[in-house]
Amino acid sequence: MTEELLAKLTDRAKIIEVVNQYGLAIDLRNWELLHNVFANPVEVDYSSIGIPVASFQPEEMVNAAREDLSGLKSTQHQITNHSVEISDDTATCVAHVSAMHFLPNDQGDNTFEMGGYYIAGLIRIGSDWKIKQWKFVVLWNRGNNDIFRLAKNA
Image (tube, rainbow, N blue to C red; front, side, top):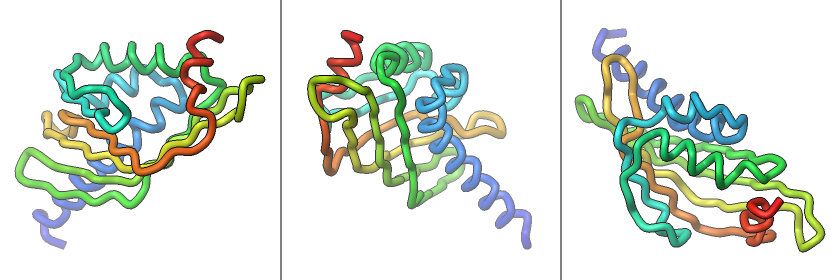
């Protein structure tokens, strides 16, 4: 195996790991890990769920996730089918996601699930890769879409 191929495969594995760490950090409420996946600043696009594109500091991303998810009993993000393109010190990773949100409640279903894909724009910082752009495109959802509102009131 050539050094060039080994470097490319190593970069690909690191990129997939960073994208996967996003979901793992959210689900485990590991705010330090979540902070560490992002470049500073990070551009976030959740326009498919009505949140406009904006730039944030990593700590702002952590605080928003903590606030949005802290009332939920649990979440589970399954991130699959990673497609990675690398060009020098930048990369794009597109991956499917199924995000389950769970909150026992007496006002409807206990779950709300969204399916779609992430588009992550990454940059190399030293020997690491960090997410510089993050986009979530929702293709479908099901369950109790009041879960987040109920969680904030819990």
